[in-house]
Image 1 (cartoon, rainbow, N blue to C red):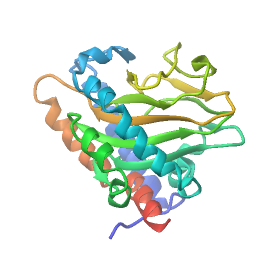
Image 2 (image 1 turned 180 degrees about the vertical axis):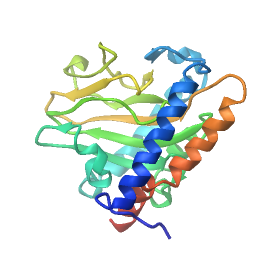
Image 3 (image 1 turned 60 degrees about the vertical axis):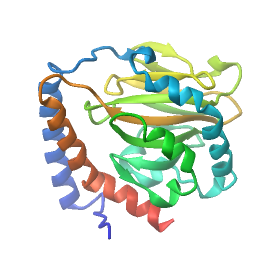
Image 4 (image 1 turned 90 degrees about the vertical axis):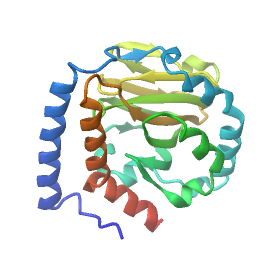
Length: 242
């Protein structure tokens, strides 16, 4: 039984403030021990990225099945109050979540067994979902909440020409390509846009950053703490209620 804590409650605000302080302290210290310093990272550094690309077709097939129930796919801003501030435009940003900070969404996983099997091969995978950006929607400049993970995208449905939608990370613009990988550190300021008349869909993965010394153990603990936090439990509760 997952217990949701109201976003407006004093308890949520206190827990959130303490969590932000702990994460900030971890981020300040961990930056010294991280093996990856760049904003955008060459996928060739991660051999599993090629495996994900080679499994593009089964992942796309399951996405097509999911899209048949499109109206039931929630907007991320409906699941997480924190996301409402970054979405711009009349449409929205929909997400079909398989995992969030290591916690599985079993009813969604049952619909995507191959995607689940494939994404579980990613070392340190913590979050996995289909990220669906509606036409003429953009995400304002923002940064991710936790530096202990890196972000992976693979283009599944990309409007043409490909430069009609894109992502700017640390001041540089990148574009998704169908069946190709993009890996970046989402704690660098980034923004996203889809200026086309079609939906843009990527496979969205967070995976644990690699640290030197014993900092990986601390990172594992931090991910587990976030996984039981109100931030995650509220999202899971709302998914269950749909």
